[in-house]
Length: 108
Image (cartoon, rainbow, N blue to C red):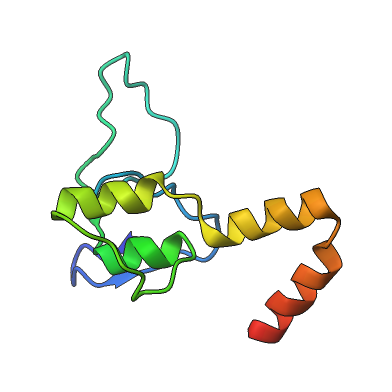
């Protein structure tokens, strides 16, 4: 996600894969962090996500039910296996990749 510092407008960066969604409402900039060397994970350019945005990034529907406090909801989303990842793993394990690609193509 990119943030225009002047307007604070948020927009997604489509030129690279999404940053991993962790059990935290903050989305860090991409790249390695030397946490052992004292480099913070989240800097001033970190963006706060809503639970719905985190769900979408993980390929869940926006109205997917999560429960508990905000922290618990982010933990649920961050710890979950994304549905599209699970579908691809199952399709590869069962040899049904052609069927999956056909279904995903029909859904978009």
